[in-house]
Length: 292
Image (cartoon, rainbow, N blue to C red; front, side, top):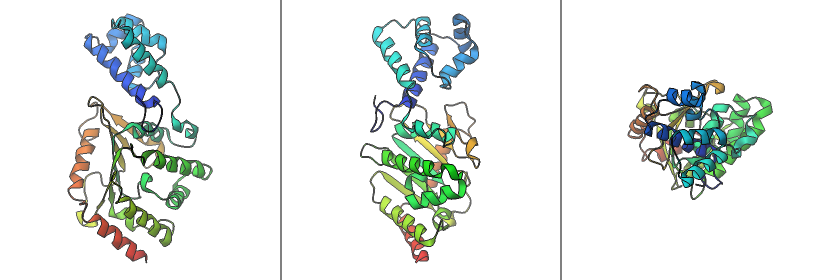
């Protein structure tokens, strides 16, 4: 299946392949240890294949399919095509030396999600930033030699996301992010005017969490939640850490309730009931008036 506005995405194919392999193993009643012992592999190899931390070779894939007694040529060819596609380079590969690995991993999910929910407590989210606002932020927090590359990546993300077939985007931004002046009053005013334009985009739902809401759960942590069209696909959570190398992607059910993607999704829903859509245009306009 093609990626959104693009050819088949390798991250999506790797995700789907590992889900299929796990389902085949569980369907036969095998544990990961059973598979490792039968194929004379290390247990860690089986785990890495099923978690997607390594790209499976066609030889290893066929060995697994034989062990799982998958003989239908159509299924074998389909899974082999997934494995080949998963080994290709994603569109952002040119930026892999300039952006943190956790962030790059999140781009694979961003590319293929049907819904993206973003919470940002301190800054305007990257997908909603104007070019001059983005440069100001990157000049402040990023290595000088990577500013141009990261700004270019940010703008390319926007081009790919804001398409007719792009995902539905939900943003909750703390009022702190629209009152803090980034760069200069004129840069900030143009950024806020851009947010006003985004309110007219049918794909975008933007809500401001007002100061009057007080403290709320996870109010200091920027995060993004990715949802997919496949009902069997797990919701994915991207947590942006203060030190960019520590940013992480979480999926599946292995996390405790406080740290799970589902917990953050429920928290996002609870914030939506406080950050009402009706108040957002007024809050943004008030912030613009202060800059004038």
